Image (cartoon, rainbow, N blue to C red):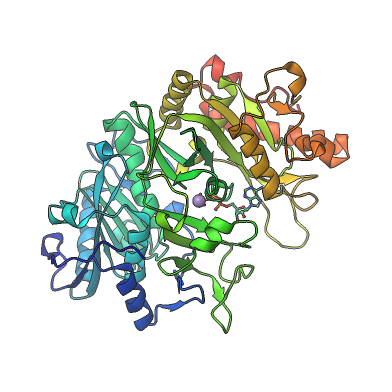
Length: 538
Ligand code: ATP
Ligand code: MN
């Protein structure tokens, strides 16, 4: 394990209102790993990774995520059920309750930063109630050198108290857990939930406001990697669509797996210093890079261990959202620092459980803008009694829960950058083929990888009319052949063996797109609207 964070520096938390705390400042991941086990809060898996349970919450809680409404945010934030306003005085009171809760306790503090590009660096101090949460911060944020640490001044502070329960009546929260961003005080206040993703997505949400508003830079919910020729690719997509999986490619250097900025200096940079991968059904064969990153230094969340402390990746008895976090250097082939040039290719990943979108298709600039604003993926139904209807899930910019501004703000920036850079945009369905969820099967990972490789190697140029077919419902350009992929897989209709059923489902989905897009219609130009499906069921 690399851990250049041993320090003799000591700090006091008095000025935060955290009094008489036993401050554990900047402990190494090894120390945090040991302390977690000594406290009975985790176990060492046979791989050497630390296995912990996040408690009541095993995922983020979007309904309990608030933004303080103040002079900075009032006129800028797109308020609603995604960005829920929180009163500033109420925040002050809750802040005092949380800090007095942490007073007198052992508290783990870590100085770190976000944004790999020095021009955008955001210094962050993370204050955790639990040692494993602090180790998560070590894994996920960027790690200052010893030299940088000497003069480190935090700009944003994350205060993370999973054991603190809010009283909704008094505290103005919805229930006992909350994640609140205050842009004036520059604090992310998280309580009542131990889910670590709230920590990283809290800072992501802050950057999604700060970068476009103050730095003219586009923040993106995407992964990114770069090839031998210095050609950058980025992969947008909602949770579970394959950002982390597909960006881990042994032949390309990983820039990052989840959060990036696209600057006006024609660069793309990672916000983070680590990865946070889903591990459901993980196998060394399918995902060797991620599998091998799970070693000492990694933190497994909510997995089940057998009597030999081997992880059973198939066991979802705690949650489907089992995860591992690890510092990016656990991946062999990485770009250092995590910065690439303007992307040459952009992939929009969608896990279409209707099984109707082509596994890969090329988008026109209008279609790219339309699909970015739509942000489509699908949720699969639960496992109850034969109910297999998937539901469409639209999330603007492929990350609405983390976007404080109106989606069109990000979409306009992306459209402009796509035009200026002449980037190619592809829609990739990593979801179902041969029928919808329940009838068809998930697209084979090796085929998806082959399609992406074909694009990256320039083997899917689609220069001649004979190279592709325009999808009759969605209007996207579907390649007819692709190296490494059976030809029939490229046409979703052909995989169904039932044209009528296929088109019925395709219209169901195109109608869902139309319905969802209504709320953006008045903002969208004619050019963007033209990028939508070509046909609907009436
Ligand atoms: P999050 O935003 O929550 O981090 P993500 O976009 O990074 O989500 P992944 O962690 O990559 O999503 O999850 C994709 C999941 O789908 C993995 O478990 C992967 O094994 C599985 N999968 C199955 N088939 C495919 C496919 N064809 N392409 C990509 N992923 C696939
Ligand atoms: Mn991911």
